[in-house]
Image (cartoon, rainbow over all chains, first blue to last red; front, side, top):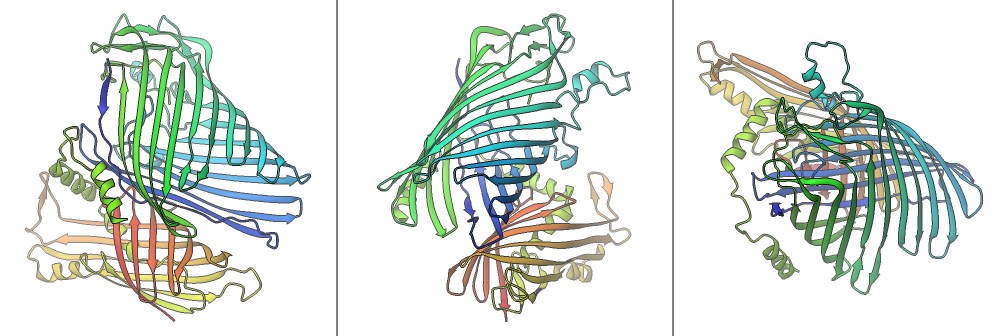
Length: 393
Length: 247
């Protein structure tokens, strides 16, 4: 049975985006600045009005040490406030803040080939509606890693190039602990439940772009360092959790007369060897087993359209749709029992907007959105009647 | 254009039965609870409204600023800020950024009046200051980026007369003494709108408390209009009106 659990979202606010980084041949140092901020009021079909915002700021410096040797340093501040989020992600009231530091060496070999090794450091803080101190968040995350990327330009006239990139990250969740394990082993004072989210992540991607058409194929592997796979006996086995994502995306950004169109489509296959145990209540002696519980295929479509009425003003609209179909996870009924139907979740957003370019580097967009999400999963009892045998982000 | 705006608003803001009724009473209680939980943070957001954290316009050597709204009116922050240019862009050597010193002070008039007139308040002190420096450099003839540092401090204390202490949730409150102090990183961009009129957007981030805000400002020869956004604050959006003179 489908059920709409958010019938409406109204968002009105300020959204500005600007950037200023044009490498000038005559300069050794070129500063970079890019900032996007939005603030919105949310009016859900159930519950009270609340506000949330997003803020992303990038500041950087490009140094041209020599004709073929460049160095680019970038700091990225990102804040994600309260908002409606797809299920399986987090609560409305969760917020996150991250600091990313990236240093990239750019070696130009020919007019067409460039190689970019780099290092990266990220600190991410998360807090819930309890307003805990940022540094105490259960899902706070630290990551360190590197990348090796190569760009090949095949059509200079129409800005055609292809980028091949490999990146890796060592990811740690310093505050994370399995609360269920701690509860079950209350007498054990040793730290046995930490580090379950720690993982090594690797990603390889191929991304071509030409004449403002772009696309790519991305393959990501997450190898968990400590998290084991739960067996149908309810006991963790010897094998460690391993997740993969294979994603294919395509889009373009073109202007036809007064129409400015930037559609995007992506298809993701998520696979994990992790299973799931459904405990309906504390002390449940016959929990239900969900095999390969996290495998899914997801289709995401975004079709934003602006009508440029004048050189400064535009009215626009957008349709966003995300459909996630689980491979083996079945939906649950109102009594929190697995049914025979595979779980399918859909989230659709319709947006109307007015955009104004307020100067040569910035624009403001006022928008209102209507969001509808539905799922054939009928159970709304998440805790404590359903206790996951493993935690997933 | 006005007609288009009205049509769009009519399309998306029409109230339907699907929307829940807004419970303003519980929203008010939530806001009051957030202020009580962190009073210094609430008052510090107003301090940021009066802080002059944009660079001096090119060619100006020093400047003064006074916050009018919401600082002087209605929260009675009497305040003054100043800027002084140490050197202009490219003056010492080609490519060397402009460097300005900034600073300011405020004192809450209502706290002094409450101490003088109230039968229950023995003493009250709400005030703060900030000092820092802003470095700015041109990216193109019409765009400047700026980076900066500021140290901000706020002191808030209140002491009740013996026998006149209020009770809060069954507990007698004799006094409270709180404050806020942090070192901030500032980054922003500025571009002219027309002759003598500028527009800027900036990020302020507190390194110890993780307090952050974004300021969007339109300013001319005498006045600055702004929208300051505090995503984690009690009042998320502050409309701002400041008076300034640059020489």
